[in-house]
Amino acid sequence: MNVVITPAMVGQVVISGLLAGALYSLVALGLALIFGVMRVINIAHGTILMLGAYTTFWSFHILGLNPYLSLLVSMPLMFLLGVLLQRTFVRRVVDAPELSSLLLTFGISIALVNMAQLAFTSDLRSVEFLTGAFLLGPFAFSKSRVISFAFAVTLSLFAFWFLQRTKLGKAIRATSQSREVAMVCGINVQRIHLYSFGIASALSAAGGSLVAVMVAIQPEMGQVYTFKSFLVIVLGGAGNYPGALLGGMLLGLVEQLSSLFLTTQVSEAVAYLLLVLVLLLRPTGLLGGRST
Amino acid sequence: MKRAFQVGLAVLLFGLALYPTMASGYGIRFMLQLFMWVALAQSWNLISGLTGYVSFGHVAFFGTGAYAAGILVTTHGWHWVPASLAGGVAAVILALLIGYPCLRLKGPYFAISMLGLNEVMRVLVSYFEGLTGGGSGLSFPTQPASVQIYYAMALSALAVTGAAYFIITSRFGLKFMTIREDEVAAEAMGIDTARYKLGAFVLSAFVPGVVGGLFARDTGYIEPISVFALIITITMIVMALFGGKGTVWGPVLGAVTLFVLQELVWARFLFFYQILFGAIIVVVVLLMPRGILGVLQQRYHLPRTI
Image (cartoon, rainbow over all chains, first blue to last red; front, top):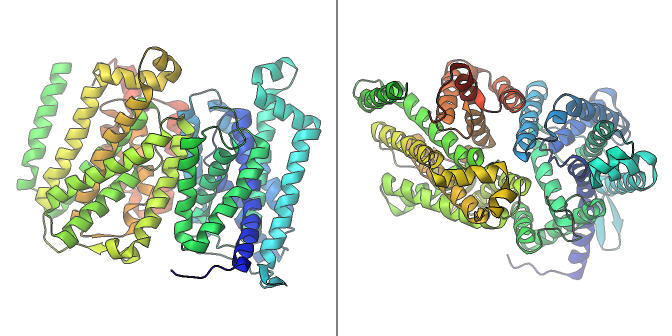
């Protein structure tokens, strides 16, 4: 491919990268939260994103609900699902070796994906809303991406403010620093685990609702997001919440930039190469994190 | 007890060796697939059951082996036996490349990087069309060889089960299990954990590569979505867990039970049967971490090594 790369193209790609990156940040923040608080990598994180996307699809399709308003449906719904999963299953493996929690959430994810296959079939679905683009000088941005970006940034900042300022947020951070000390301070750690899993699932569902207007919805769409969220956590440093935000942006940029030179398919492989490189050169993440 | 078990095993192997002389074509194909699953579940057991490092992308080795063998057979005219062995070598090379960075770190990094590896391999294989035929796949020249493949699959299953037996009953295996139980303690005792983990990983990659090559020869046609399918990884994990991970006979037992059930009933209800796979994982992790073999051993006081 001998394509001439103009500055305008680079600008376009950088902006697309940031637009995509904000969504990665949002979803990855949820995964980072669960990992930070419980030391559990939730393989079903992307599956919950898929369920969030379906919530948006169905509420748009049947009720005609505005996809952005459907965040108000998908987030509480997935919060509840998260709480339920934590309460019935994940709670039992928090202190077990990693092998158990990885396998358990993997099992949950397989069961949920196939229930979705059974209930919704594997047909590709899409929410046709706000097609078209904003034009600004030499750049064009699809409207849905810009609005999703705005929502993702707002939600991430809100989640961040919540963790920093509110009493519950502080309790969550305290638990992720040291469970024993948090307990000694009178924090009900079990309850914090419930809330964390719920909030993380709500964030993932929000990501799902926001991508629903941009990509094809199908039961297996979530796995890629589990992987990418994990990649973001590795980039930002495990258990490091600001790191997750930065890592998401970085992943978005790298993917888009590599798509300048390669086909979109292969730019997925570039993200993978990035993971391997970071693991080799800077295993604690770019901002530094807790070792696992 | 142990004596009876050995005699039973010898009789069974003898019977299986003679089986193709009297079986129908369907019977042979059924058995060779059964052997394939035993080999795959047991290979997963070598890394994940023994060292505790969960591989969510073991099918990447299967697919790599299938494609390496496929390319050698179709464009270079190799015989399928050396081609399948070369498939195993290709899988080992991939395991070295990916295991070196990822195994130096702890569990989750390795687990998820394996989840991604499978996706990446599928994308790469689809992309390099000139070599792999891309999305339209690779077709093998027709040349029925079910009986030979039956023996090759049986040998693969036997080899990896034998390897599991020797590892589990040796000092070498104790080192793996120490890593699984407490990696820091293992290091403190002077075990070079990175080296042993890589060793276990490479060992567990070889047979899936070979079996992938045999599978490709047997079906006669491969494409990226058929040989890099996540369901293959899921199936081997479920089989090993269900039977009992970290044991010699658990994965064999799990593979036989689930494969027979799958052929008899479940395959007709595809998604339902995969929901059941998810449920089996959850139930095994929560209620019987040592699988059905563990339950049997406890109830009937069987020796650990069988």
